[in-house]
Image 1: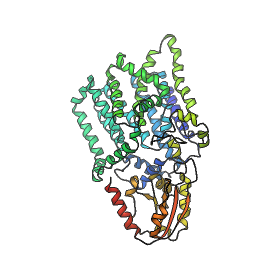
Image 2 (image 1 turned 90 degrees about the horizontal axis):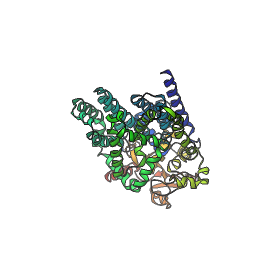
Image 3 (image 1 turned 90 degrees about the vertical axis):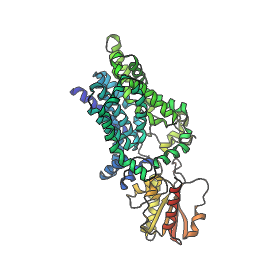
Image 4 (image 1 turned 60 degrees about the vertical axis):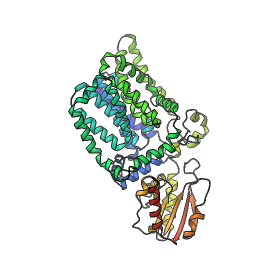
Length: 507
């Protein structure tokens, strides 16, 4: 037991070390991270962009000082806990040291290393998917009703983190109907657990109702601007790459779930992966939505292979099996993580392009991967806005209005909320402080190739000029301009209220 505990601790330590060294210090935080961190200043039971769990974690990060270390700590923690859950699942299936090491290695050296570099709901989402599947295994093995309640709690955490976990139930339900496990549907404890879950997510559902179900608007916007560019074959190809080093383990799991007699009680998991992937394909989901589907299958495959390779000459294949995920990781280290400079990526464009990493959500190829371009220029923007803001007369009467949530979030993060930048984009539309009368305006405007901001806005102010712009050519915000307007001739607050009402009307 002590030996296994030491090995597991070693995997956890290695996981944290890798997450911190896989990001080059020349990159800032990513666009979405700034929004999530700013949600700590506006705690609620729901948001336009995501459920409330991330905001609660952001509040904890704020209490810890809001430093980058803590921003990166939590996704790394959720990734480490995913390894722990897979470890525990393997113990439940086949308490064999080789199986445990194979499973932990497969989860460690996978797409989770990339996913866990960013402070987004995705890392906790994967952990919740894996844990809920583990709870199903525990219930099958023990038939104890307590695991139904534990499953309800895990689902609630997952739901309040990212609605994506609903797809797990959509795929699991018909799979259970096709097996003997459908007997659980006759258990009254199941419905009590479901009622408990419903009561716990009810505050968020009420928030959605009272705010006109913004999640529907968000999904429609995604469908129109991003999901329309999702290619079915591209989605399926990505599924093979997420855990490419453990693909043989996952395939072994699918075989074992159909033909390995000791796994006959778990046959629902074979159908669950098929139904879940089918639902994702039908809804044209982004490829990474399905990342949480696979860790539990690495557990099944590892347990089966440990039984298959335990005797005779086959034992010598054990170290080979463990080495495969590591060997796949070595070349990936050089191009799959933001540990290389933008200049290096541009110089080696061909390799990145062949892997599809330069393709953005708009369906076009760009100089850098989208996540990397979204991690540049933010400090520069915040510093320049702060400089302009501090030079204005009565700066406290200055409204900083941005085009998007990344700009507003970055300014607020790096200026330690000295500036309360806002936007009509995402959650910021609900965060305007209109109790304050504004006389000046700093306008942060994304470059679109056609600059008409001065022409359109200057008539409403006594003085107008371009103050600065983002000069980092690799940043997605390259050429984003900072306009300054001093001495309002009109009621800025009234104009903002009208714009807010008009924006909400179209949602």
